[in-house]
Length: 368
Image (cartoon, rainbow, N blue to C red; front, side):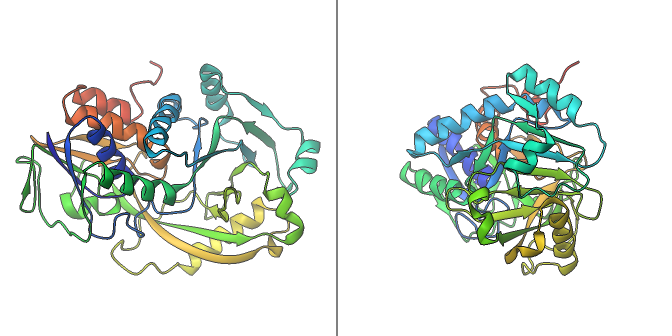
């Protein structure tokens, strides 16, 4: 088949990878460079983990997601994954432990409660104020995001995929398989925060959401502790909704982000950090990290996700010859290789379209 993929973020590139390794002719379009430094995929590191809160369907997809990343590492000739535990510092009561312990037990992923004296001894960067419970989970780590998308772009070019950077597509014809004047057997729209501008209103209502992250320099006496630190994830009361903290492993920087979705901002506008958003993130950081005032803010950045109302992925047929691929919602990166493979099966007819949609919306594997 001759297939056009619109969008060269991790989703578009993984879909192109899966299609090409099945022998199809693929062309990838992006309005910017490939990889695009303003895409939501372009960042130093992202979380991957088996613990998934109440979204059990996505949790039970994670073993297959890790296996898909393994196939990608084989094709790239190198792994861009760093294993590290994910440690959850719980400071508020909410329904998290029950579904997580259930799904991790079903998948055979080890987890344990960390005694508070062990937290004080081994996790000196954790602010103990207000801690109710600390849970360590295995089966987690970092995906080195910018290395992944750069490696994918180089691999696809070497495999004969046509890359068309700096090509702004104005018209998508999913009935005829057209992107402007290009025509093929199928088109995949993986345009991230720009999807609604290309396709108009959609039932899933994916909306652009401005996200803020910050990179920090820890004090010198904490560098050794951070070099062996786990991923730290905290839900907190307040404007930011909590904070996730990624340790500076494999040459990356200490990074902090929040969980809130803003549904504000213009993905085509300048990437200027909102001072109120940054202040809320720093407030969350002070609640999560001990001695936060000693940490130096090195850089703050903004990016955009496309977030659906229920934070489930919107991956489904679009017209007679098209597919919508909007699996962002802040948690798409960790599943990107698996989504690309599954989407490729749907596009080429190797798997029923309704099954692909149900699976990638996290519903196929949910308990009855």
